[in-house]
Image 1 (cartoon, rainbow, N blue to C red):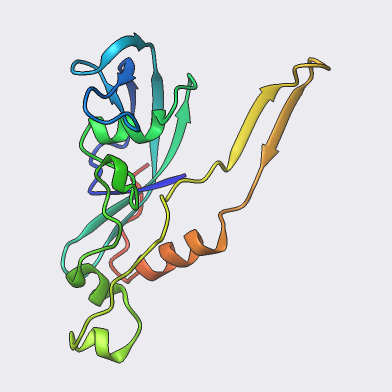
Image 2 (tube, helix red, strand yellow):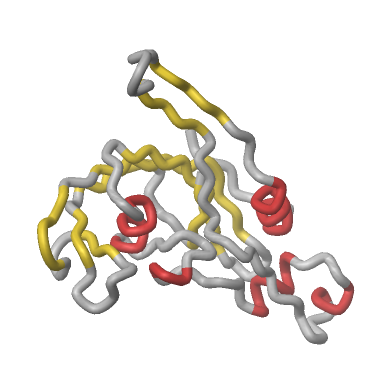
Length: 170
């Protein structure tokens, strides 16, 4: 489950091959502009919840299902459609939210008065593998693993909640 800024579509499929970045060995690129062999990559997404604060800053909590397993696939695909993962500075996501967003989300009186507003820092990418499934290489049995959202990500989400939380349309 991932958190993004201003995501518009309720669900979709990104079917764009991934290759290496010509300018940064750490990065991958989706589609044209990548160098070397482009490898097929398919990612499905679904909106779980939308957030909107008092200043109309919008965030979207998504369920992502990669159908292939390319390096950085979720990060690359989301950045390629203009929605980098919150906290993902390698692919264009903010490492911390702006003072305006943070001052609305922060709980301290100073932040609410906008006197030295706090910055809302995550310290990591807002990425979490809630559920994994794979065939065990020795036994051939299907393994299904689930893990709850880590406390730091849960706390980050809680800091964004307000009376203006926008539910997902059915």
